[in-house]
Image 1 (tube, rainbow, N blue to C red):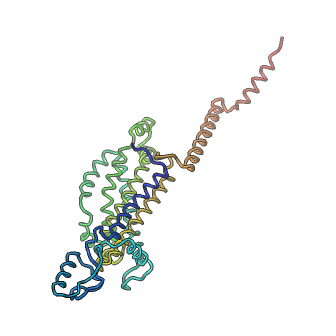
Image 2: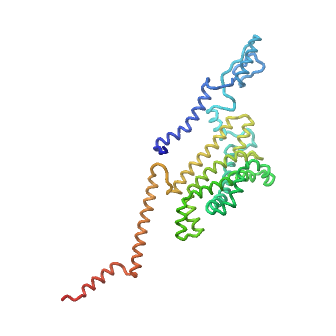
Image 3: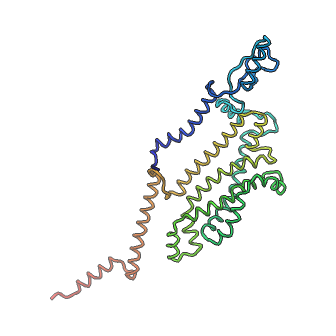
Length: 366
């Protein structure tokens, strides 16, 4: 149990995590006898109610054809189709390409890439503000009990309040520009992040702190030389998770007095019943989040090369660690040699040997 997979098997399993949902989506979309509760009209026949291209539930289609047959009129024709809110994969792919290449339906509407860039900036600044304040506060709360007792009860109280509930208040205080949106994302990420970082800090091995205190480390050096390096890799992972939470709250924040942003784009396309564009916007958010998370994971390998990982270490990591080990050995040997010189009063060892030899030679031989 809990044994790491080989690189090849791990890559295959990760690929399957995307292929399996896509395969299920294709089956539901392209296999006629799987679900397809609606009918899309190709020939309305003699019906005054139906039109070509109209989509309606199968029961309504059957009832309308029954009425036409009773009246001796030509029945309508159509083929099975899924509801309009579940477009096929090829329709979503086409909508995704068109969203970046085709001008918006209204000149006042922004392009998809403009809406996406607006959302990225909102997430970046709100998350940066949250992390800059929450991480130091969480480190202090997890290290010093008095700070934890002062901050955590109120933080634990506020984190249960839904951030969207602060929307009207933030608009009244900060206006309808980007400031209330940043405030909502900040509220949604700051308070949970303080508690998570504090709990992560408490997981540090107490033996490390006790050893530093035994060696006479001050509180400042204890925090900067022991606690911070020890918990930084885990805090980094906490920040990665909190960044995903920021995108969750963005979807709500950008519905408050917004005229741009990826969430606003999705909401507008839903009003127009362009659900292929809705899926395209959702996929864009997922792709941005996935790419960002993978880049952060790659960055962690360079920031924390000493962090234990499953599987074999990379060649670069092994070389870096070997070089650092060799440097430590060389430096330690040099320090010991220099200490030996100082103990002997600054006289090099070969000088001592030469003097002993001269003294031996000066002894008269009987």
